[in-house]
Length: 474
Image 1 (spheres, rainbow, N blue to C red):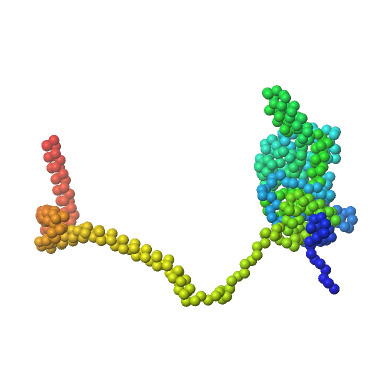
Image 2 (cartoon, one colour):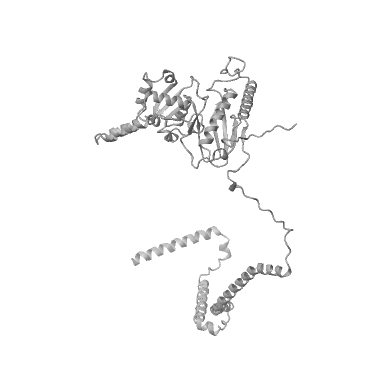
């Protein structure tokens, strides 16, 4: 019996050369949801805590949680080339048949342009649907958002107090700097852009009215026209349509993740959402369509990725293929004859020989410089030797050594210096003899205390005489 085909790529004769296999998508969705539910049940059994939010309607929904508490299911798209070149702060949106925010218990926070009062009046009016109005728990404009939520703790409290954040399309690119990583570190609570502006025809008509007005109030009216809201039915329609869509955050990379379902969905619902997202994603955003797709997987927050589509070719164009050059074996090289070997050896030696020649030339230049400086060095050496000999002669009381003629010519004062030195030595010797202290008799030396007292008396007497002489002279 022939083995069953396990290929994940489906080719058709007409239309797109590749298509998503619905059976494979449903099979992967069923296996993924079953695995996530079994892992959740095991964790609850180990911890001994029961999930109080679990549904109790029937046996199939026994382990399912409410939409607001369920874990997300992700679709990961891997492409052969980067989808875009720059990161976009404003995400794209794709409509799915089974929305992620369908629960009526989820709360909504609206972030609008200035002022917020006009949007509060529109939502409080009778033209706005009551069911949708009950889900909107807060409306805040950009000015109040900057003033009230400056600290990290206040932003975190705002994030945890609402389930969904909808922001006006005109200010959504300014929110990352205001809300920070409290909102933008993860994708679950990032503000979703919604078009709250009036239709283009109404905006153009209002702009013409402002241009014909007076110059004093023209700037104020233009600001009001720029921030003018749409009507109540239009805003309600935009909010409802946005809640039935999923966000696609594109970045300059080959991998894109889209949240396409919840663990509380059935496998059929997850498979239908996957098909809807893949069709829009490949046709609108992937360069060259299916030819640029490398793989498609679905996964949970903490699970392995299950493949639902894999490409057979890892390249887009035939020009991307580079043929590998055959490796040349060293043993297979043809042997060279003696003449060729000698040429190769000579060519290898030439740079070394040239370097040796340059070194020898530099040494020759240095020697020539030294020879030029030799006469002066010799003269200095002779004068130094003569000085040393004169000092030696003076020490042994001998006649100084005759100096060389060249040294006498360059330094004629050496002899006179030696004579002056001898005279100075004689004077010092004579002075030492004069200052010698006479020997103390043995009898006086035997009483040191008396000698010290006599010495002190003599010192006082001498100091008094010196003082009297000074006074007389003065």
